[in-house]
Image (cartoon, one colour):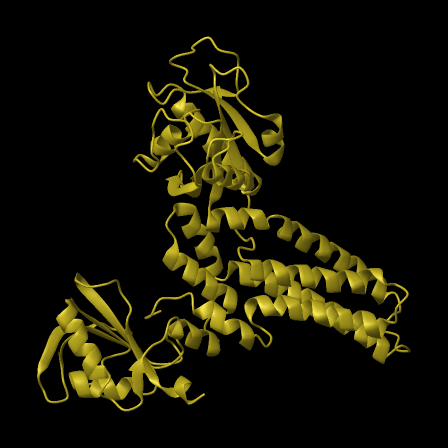
Length: 440
């Protein structure tokens, strides 16, 4: 497409006003733009303090200018960065002047990163890691994204693809040269043993996908229990603000309320649900239904039980939650109540720090200590499952000819290649790069 030959520009830093803003330019017109706006081409990768002028000689601003000649740039093309004062007027004047050059236009979402991919500077996993790094809000999200953006995950997938390719080469050599002394017939036995080991490694890798999902998308905790058990009060304590309405009236919460919190570097998505009870109120019935759905989707359910109630929790609700903890509430009113996993009072604060520590430890047991080279997106998992399926066809179908088994190996390698973009992935690109902001 002709549009990919355009020179693109965009504001790459945050929204103005700010002390400094960065305007990025990439494409064949970069040197011409520099020549016309500052009168020279600065030394590559050295910051030069210059007055930036319109082509009519009117000053726009004074700031730092950097020139990155391709292919040694982020995009692989000639690129420029203008570091200017971050007022709306200055930015608007510079962007307006850049738009007057023929063959230049404002960049689309993620277009700088897409050009980096097209020019072999980044692969798809690194690009996605970069998008996650920009969006990271917690320490563990930052670490996970950095592992991807710096190529840790790509190196793992590339090494697996290389092992599959080597295995195919040995099998095809046996097919092509069956009578050669240096291609013994037993080579296949070694290949299949090696591939079985590889399959085990990929299966183990996929089994940790939940870890990547928890770190990237958040650990889902649902607060559940009967009406007036103290769910909304606990939600507000965790959030440190009034997210949920707290009253003495049973059934106040009718929908699933949600707030994100940062708990020891992990993103935790906390959900307050409608009280679990039989009710004739149609709106409350829908709230209870949604609460039941939330129980099944949670990574951990905190069941609150009013310690003054004779039957605080329905056993069928416990069965809906794969992982749960039962917490007795209103400890200030019932200090000698029956033993629960934990006991708290949102009035006096008793037991709340212990509950927070329990949740932190629970997440750490799920995630802590594992490598952050884990799949983080459904796209990755789908390709890995398809790779495993093709790999198993090659390994297990011992009655098939070597030609067919070698073809299954080729498919397995292609599925791995689709993750990083080493094979044709045109249909994936629009989805991936649309997640970026303009200027990246």
